[in-house]
Image (cartoon, rainbow, N blue to C red; front, side):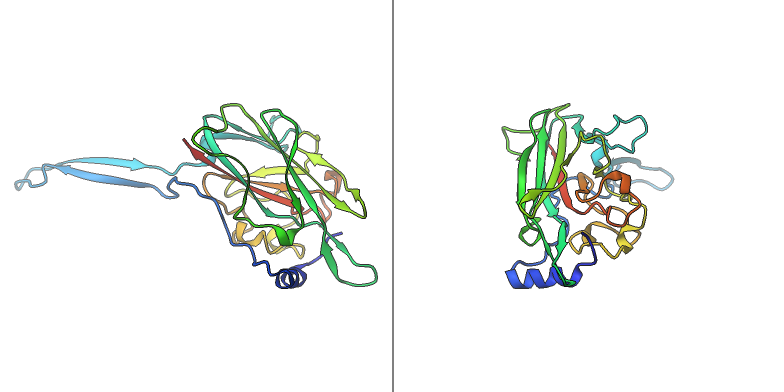
Length: 259
């Protein structure tokens, strides 16, 4: 169900008039490098004396300081329950980066994207749809779910969980969510390596929408207050060694901001 799709994606975008997604829509207000000030007192000193120097350094915030990310691969980390759990009150926004499920057209090498659904469960609630469409209609600038106004936020312990499935030939494909007990929903932070058995950034199945979110070494490249959610919807995790298990069938970006 998956193969190299760069040319077809470009053609679909051109035909539909949808521009290619831009990279990184994280809106973190936290510094990504250390910043600070240095002051001296007195400012004018006599020969042989020394001023008192005062340093004030603000180190970069990282999302792990504010949330717990529970992933199936975490040692002793909650089995197959994959979630993000805030440690403090936070604002949160969710965007769709891409939806990569495709099918080949009969008797040809052409393929097309199929409708794919993303779901979110907040604070133990029902999984509800936050996106349903094909990849050419993904706009990474669009916030599909948020708790980011002055009166709403994600409170301590209110877990975010995710799910997804695709629709083809008048029926739904397999359904996976954070609590399926599988490794089909994965959550990573900046600098982590996507958990495929081959280098995803060099894979022939790598979607163009995911390229801006991986560095030259194949590690996740997102903002310091972001989490990225990868979903594999066409293969079970028992097929993890198959190149079709590429975690690109639904990709979400979750951006947090302190109050």
